[in-house]
Image 1 (cartoon, rainbow, N blue to C red):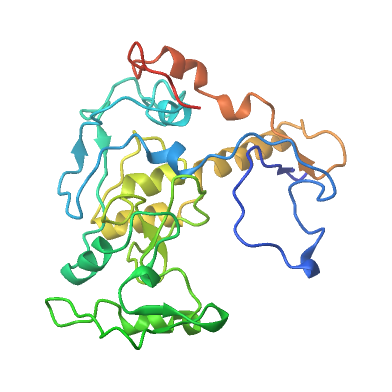
Image 2 (image 1 turned 180 degrees about the vertical axis):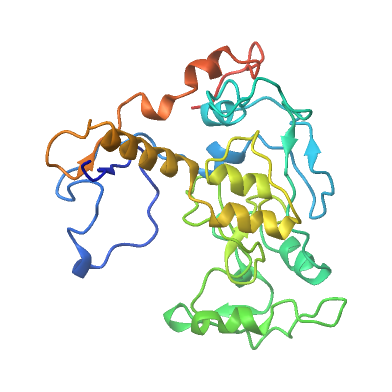
Length: 295
């Protein structure tokens, strides 16, 4: 059996930063001298904008969606196991079929929740926007000498020392907000906002287990088990479902002897990312009459 080929990407991505010149011509995806032909990037808004608002403490593992999907990805990710063409489907729907599962955030302690409540609702917001912080030379944070340090009701500072010193004061991550038009580069296993950007774009909380699961491509019917912290670990440590499918597809081609040619890379067929789309159009997850499906 020939070795499996490496699947090429199907979608664009919103890149943060850049690649050092020393690492040019090292992208295993496409010829860097040519513009790739990729589908439009899936953004955070595409993934989670249909999910209902929840508070910092949300005790219910099962809840109603409360609104129809807004975008094609959301329509697809809500499909039932049967409509998703999941061959592990045993023919019987579970008791919570069609419900929203695991839409629960890690409950922040009072101090962190009060800090998060003061992070502005805007793109790029983080601890640097809190009172008493000043951005000095070389983009390094420092205490504003004209503002007395602010303290929370507990007596702890509004801006923790660790946020100021993280990565020698250059980091933008502590208590950082994600935004709708971004792609999330990493789904983390720990949902604490102390040194990573994990706050919801317009709510005073971290992303929920379900929101993280969607970023990893898990269908909404996929249920996590255990305490909330363990659910975050399960999702964060998982291979993203679309990546696993692509690798499995190439492994299957190699096993069946269908990996033709000497090129070590494989372009996935146009229909690959649309598995289940036909079912999506015919499923009970529909767009109400008069509403326009966002693209």
